[in-house]
Length: 145
Image (tube, rainbow, N blue to C red):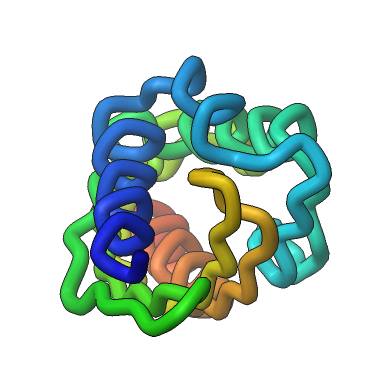
């Protein structure tokens, strides 16, 4: 079963994030899924609807966001994913004017999968690094002006 779960995890990152296919979310994410720590403030996101709102917000800020999976493996009903994301801050999705900053983030997550869908996740990603990279771009622009 873990091979199927790993394939689902890889599909999630490729389709939902790299291809920006929000239509795949209800197919891959359980209706009552809880995603711990995924929001930009570190809070929980519940179900496909809340996830899609966050997805839209992040893609509004970073429309070229791309994930590379550094590791993805599983045991039993869980998978572990370690990823690197690259993007450019070109939109207002975070409530911050676009800076053009090139962002590189790293994160990890554990997902519990049942019935062919993600049921629960525990995510950890470097939010501070994202905001520091955006702030550095703002400071560089103001210093050059």
